Image (cartoon, rainbow, N blue to C red; front, side, top):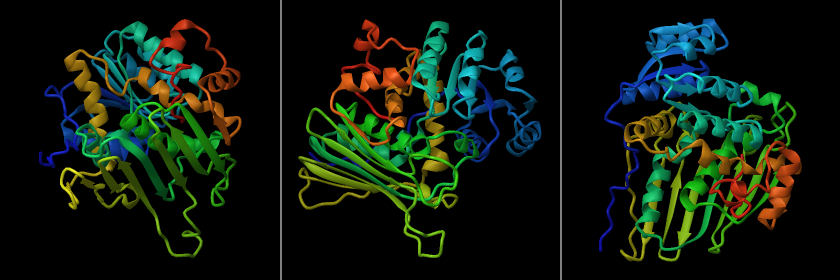
Length: 394
């Protein structure tokens, strides 16, 4: 049969790239990642706003953005804006989306993850966008890391057979964003949300989840989940597990450093393993994949590329939103789909708990995230956040 090493590691971009994009936010992720990626892709960012006008003007000058607004409300009201790119904390995001869908000139929105602080608020955002006919995409950009996309292709082509065990091991020390200090969630919000969304992207929704968390000795502000371990259990027998270790040993306190992110998938017909290059940022360190399959006994395949997760993968998330507008379809990173990535918000009550049934999870969520009728037929039968399909956490 032969093994094809063209693994579609880069997402397709739309031919039409001149949608007029308004950027909301001027922090690191917008300034140094998203806007850099958009320029590389040829996207058309025409305006920017943030809560600190001086920073907004600085970023606009740095990235060549012609219009600067002092408030996001002014930017949204600009009738020339066709698409919004939002990069603000999750407690601020719902109000921006709610206002944006009132403006007929807004054709699509790319929001940050986590989508909101509660499942109820996220659900309201999704409903508002659907009622207004405005596509809502969520910036789950690790799906667009080149090794993860390559792994998806390897799985789809059957090189690994049926997945048996999948793992992600992260031992890295993040620079925590300032807004995280305001919440009681830390690693789940900022790091685990990527890995759990990747498991969903690669394998779909699990039947049950086990999570164990403890605080990070290095992080001084209050939090519950610094080091997080979790296991996703699938009906097929597949187990997907991750260790999200932001302590990574006393590397900042005088010991030697050993930081990395690795993943591995074992199947009935083959095995794949890889690395994520993000811990090397700002050095451009491409992620990698190596795989072997019974179709070519005894061989390892190691395709390589020049692209990196930060910033190149961010071309993929905005590109997917714009491509969905061109093709008139729902985006694959839709807000509706993303509800499945934030279901386990209930775990903020008990960071360590096992949900053996979907009903038990739904009952716990109903206590924590009020405002949604979990017994409503649409809720039970929908593809997202249903009692019948327990999903990932944020």
